[in-house]
Length: 249
Length: 264
Image 1 (cartoon, rainbow over the protein chains, first blue to last red):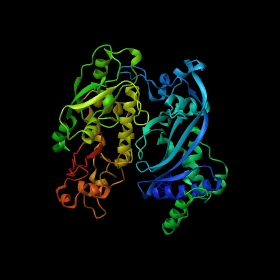
Image 2 (cartoon, each protein chain N blue to C red):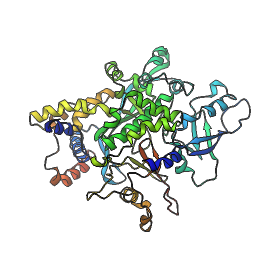
Image 3 (cartoon, helix red, strand yellow):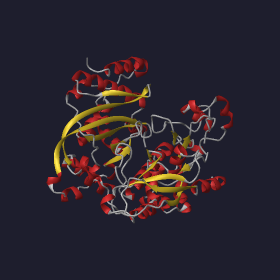
Image 4 (cartoon, one colour):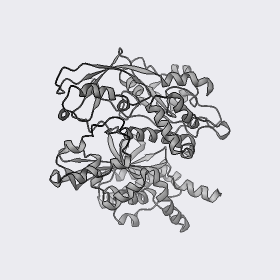
């Protein structure tokens, strides 16, 4: 591997500081648009935090929640089902439409940083207005068919239920293993054109829509990468990021 | 690693005698008898409790049964944590057997992950292995292994086969000193009284001046409040080869904070 390839490979990953700074810039524009993103700090630690946004969307849900949430009473040895098949619509297809309805569902999106993989990861959860959590099947049913196709093709691109690493509660997560694959072209192009790229913006624009999260076009025009002299301006950037999350006045 | 073999075996074969009692409000056709089982510390609740499920299903109607879940003193037990971690975290100071309550209704959606099949457990297990290898070897070892090797790791755990498991796991535990050993130590620190589920951060096995980090160094940096200053001297084990809960290529440390500030 040539040095060039190595440095390109390295740049497909995101260090924690750049994550924070990129989020900061993203949040500034969000504040301007008043579209609901906020920075959540962890345990009063300035360094550790994540971006969060809550939206209400109309969704198809089961009106008989017990049936959709109930796991099949299978023996522990049921290794037939691959994880992709768990996301399959077999059961939903068989269900009569009378068992489904439209309802306003509260989707909560969190953008966290994974230090193990050095990339951002998208977590989300969904619940009805009555506070009932949506099942994996219901969430899957609300993924656009085009995206369902794509997700089913790659075993490591599925939506799975995971424990939120900071809150300890069940969330859904879009598996991060392919992040490098789709970030590489964007980052390489930017490099070639000597233009900076805001990693978080680029990444979220790709993964967000898969799970119903839109990133308006104005972000692409307004949000750039953190300044190269980030070391000198870290305090200032973080301060302005914190300020911007105090919300629109 | 050869001298560690005894310790590895002791860790693998660790068992927790457990008494499973059906939740009193569950609807049964006859009175429910408790069920006793020795649980492997390194495994997962939903993987080793088929017998528990069968035992209680015998006296219940199908319509009264949904996804089985476990609770200890009102706290839903996270099946995706190793059993040993759950016990050490919540019940290590109590008398054995460990008393766990079994539920078949009102699954606590906000607290527990669903576990409909063994594939879900396998996926979680493998995902932990991969993350640990990402930290140790940038994922190179796990990616170089074949699918059947991954399967062997899982089957070794599922069927409680130490040799089968370690035939594969030893590749993941290789510490090439000439290449600087592990890139980072995969660890998680669990604390009973904490907002966050665990502490997990990047930590190098060796300091900038080439001195091997110890367990004490790790704890001092990640969890200083847990260690009284004068106890640090007694934590001499090397972080990178310590066999404290060495499971699945990842190090899981359990810290219980009680008045005496015991470190396990």
